[in-house]
Length: 352
Image (cartoon, rainbow, N blue to C red):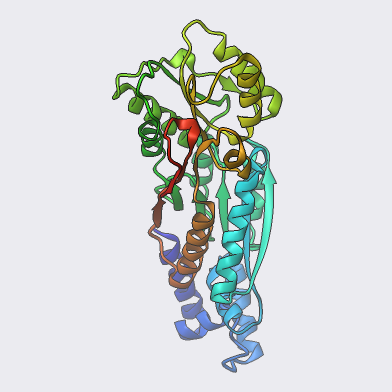
């Protein structure tokens, strides 16, 4: 039995027990008893009966109705992985605030950072009636599986991950990697590599697979052992990783780098040893930064449409709460490509 059907059955049981109509019980449980002039005594009986059977109200739908009457705001949670507290979070929040302003919504937003692999310690926040809905970014596969096995009564939207249980907003990571290969001038390139993280999610692995497949389809050699794994992003790690890769006898000359924060270190090493980008090495970075555009040469990037993801996630939470739907919504968005000199193309192009 789904959550919606179970809730209806509980309401009917309370109505039968007290000799009231289902609509009267529903109105009281949704906090509108005073508004429609139901007696305090009847309201008390309904609430006591609900407590006895551990009734779980649709908190989100109730808050939506209260918000419409300006009695209370929507209370939403945004869970964001701590090692990804970069400009992407800023753009995501900007997308939320733009939607709030455009639709004149009244929202209280709680942002909770969490350590990689440590999300389940915050499960009590989702299990309580504290929030109307939640957006979650950065889960690994184990955390997602554990969360999907729980009975959560509020709408949840996964950011960047697909789900058969909860709503999701994401982009096609495999296709993105494949198109990054197509965005490079692979003329004369014989080998390629993907620079990623040790602790990576499914989206990054799919992007890596798509990039390597795209390179191979252009007869560019791409070996798994050429793909270094780093622990985190920094100038020093970018510099040392470039040193490691470029000192190899089999030099990969086309790179897709999983984090733009490595750019300054990589480019510094290239300058130190006289490697010319894009003549000797072609690079595309994942996620965008103003530093990439103003570097010389200007650096190409493929970016997550964070603002659009935020707007879609907020729309889904509101729709899910209003309609009390059980079917998960899946919305796929296109990445943003900023094609500049470093990928080997002469003319800068920006497109989705």
